[in-house]
Length: 372
Image (cartoon, rainbow, N blue to C red; front, side):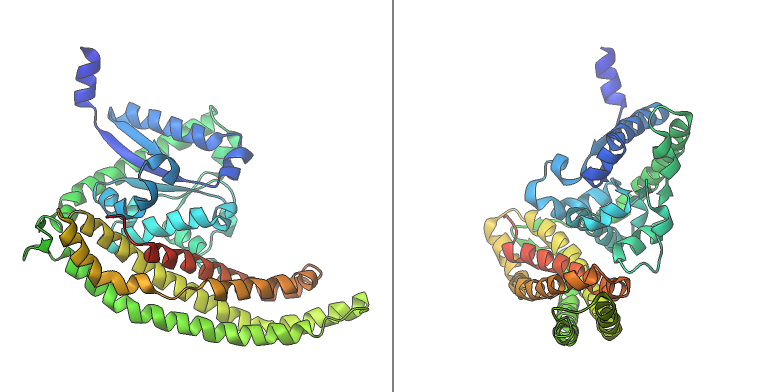
């Protein structure tokens, strides 16, 4: 009887944790211990349950998890990335962070993202060339480096998790108070595959997409232009690297190449980041549209709305361009490893190319379309 009563009284809130698996190994499975202790503190302080999901593999949504983001945010679910600088090297981690962040931006609920930094806090800067690092800085992360060094079960650990739980409770409460306003946007519903006059969600999303489509095309054109300039410099630079050069000659050549590559690499970085940011915004809209289409009760209605976004699913394949960029970087590797100036000059290009790779994966998802 007590179990039944407790179940009725208790309510469940949801927390999504994203982290790099190697970081959990570094801290002896402390990320899992962190999640378990956070659940216990939350239950002790609220009497409610905190359901914790470790990002995509435990959500149970399958490949369509992105289309569920808006619904989760509207219901005050919290996204908590566990950050080290290793996190930003993982494409899956960047994907999770960017998907939740763009969804939260669209809904005005960025406060439902609560980053926790467990190593590398000194490197979290707003001017960092990796845009995801700047995002974490803007989201006002919690620094728990000393907490994770102290480890589970220590007084430092318990104090930090108690304080974090208080903040978590406050954010969930804020989200729950806002959720009726967010939900009212979808109160009109869809009837027999056609939008009611009271429900403009799909039309609003389609209008957003219409604005973003030319912006995405323009950003892609700029990437191709900057890549062309960068690749010309790289191809010319590689001709300077000849067999038989002495160490001193190689050093002089690498410095010359670094100077030549500095501005083209910076331009490729900026255009690559811009392309990715535009694609991520469009992806958030596409996720919302997929969610809205999924609520249509008939296959005919779904197919009719899907036709309106079909052009976006036919975006150009970026893999050949990315492949060419990667090949050029590999050609520079033998010289780059010997030269700090050259590594500095190529770093912006590497980040730019990484963001173009991220964009290629986003575009691939659009091409695959929804599972209706």
